Image (cartoon, rainbow, N blue to C red; front, side):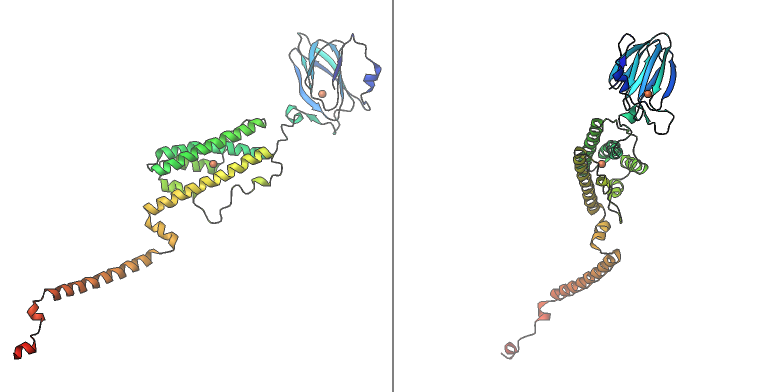
Length: 321
Ligand SMILES: [Fe+2]
Ligand SMILES: [Fe+2]
C-alpha cells in the first residue's frame, strides 16, 4: 500500500527497508502549477518520491495525499499513481526507482491498461455490432411496415421492428453493465445496403427476396459460441437473440411464400417442379379435348333435333293389319 510521510513525521527505518532497492534509478522532476504526472502504474518497479519544494497531491490507488517540501511517498510496484502540482509555485521532487526505469522489464501502464480496459473479452465487439445492427434493423423494418400496403405483412414487419429494437436495447444494457458504451456506427457495408433496400420504395417482393435462402448460404451465427470466454449472462442473451433472429427469418420467408402464391403462379409452380413448357403442352392438349367434346355435343344436338317420324320405322305388324 502506498504511504506518505511528511517532514515532521518520524520515519521508522524498518519501513523504508521494506522496499527492495537493488539497482536504483533516479529522476529529478519539476511540475509547473496545475501540471500533472499522469496516472500510471509499473508492475516491476517500486517508486519513492522525495518532495523538495512547492505544494501538490499524490494519488496512490484510491488514496490522495497532500505533499509539500519534506514529504516522502512510497509507491509499491503495480499500484496506480499520479502527482499533481496543486500550488502556485513549481513542485520539485526527486523520484527514486528500485530499478533502472529505462530497462526493458519496466512495465508502464496507463489507466486503461492498469484497470484492464484494454484487455476486454473479444466478444464485446460482437455485442457492439449486434446492438448497433439491431438499432438499424428496427428503423428499417419500421419504415417498411409503414410503406407496405399489405396489412398482414405490415403486422409481421412491426413485430420484427419491435423485436429488433428490444435486441438493441438489451445488448446496449449488457455492454453498459460490462462498462462500455455502444458505437452505433459499427454496421458493416452489406448490412447498411440491406437496410437502405428495406427503407426504399421498392416492392415487398423485392425486399422479401433479400431473406430468401440462397445455395451455400452460411449460418451468420455459427461461430459465436466458439468463444469459450463468454460469461453465462451474455451467453443467455446471445442464445435468445439467435433463436429470435432465426424466427424472424422464418416469418419473412413465410410472408414471401404467401405473396408468391398470390402474385406469381409461375413462382408457385417452380416449387412443384412443373415447367412452363409442360403447362403449355397440357393447355394445348386440353384445348384439343374441349374441341372434340364440342363436336360431339353438336352432333348429339343435331341428332336430337331430327323429326320423330324420320327416326322411327313403321311397324311391320301394324302395316299387315
Ligand atoms: Fe511512477
Ligand atoms: Fe436482427
